Length: 229
Image: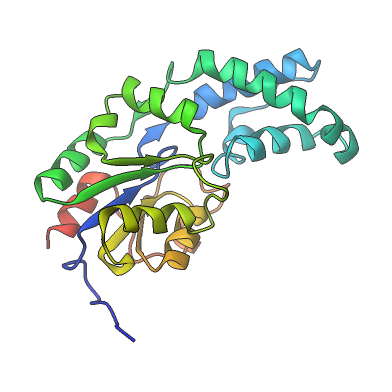
């Protein structure tokens, strides 16, 4: 069996997560969730509570935000309506307060100049992902973008990442995933990719130091510098 080098000199492709890695989107999601809850005659949630639910897709976000103060049978009964309300409100809020983290544009530009092939893989639905990337000036950095509804499975399943490897005609060990949560790490490890994590973002309320990775980088620009060595 081939054992990839310990460093990053063999990396030719990069898969970057969206929410919590490139963009601080929590306030948009917080607004949409609380407008949904208002429509369901439920009290507003604190921002930190909503942040703890981010990262596993819109369905998990909505379900978790309902289960916090309602029984499972009631959540199941009104989940469809809640999803419709969330999607409606998030269409209005998507990108209104989102902002790139420091070093994101510079890091992606540097990676591109280094000849690295770039993909964005997120669990956010594509109908929200593409407008958000354009609105924040990030879309043109990426050859490939996959969302949580692009395939039958999403992170932490490796399906999206394996598809990127196939799209780029690269072996998984030639690709590194950069993310802010255990979902990114588990998906990358299952695909056979390397993993870098950022110390900010939305790791479900857990310390990023507890996540299996090949290193913590303070920004995407620092990641680009690491990959150039």
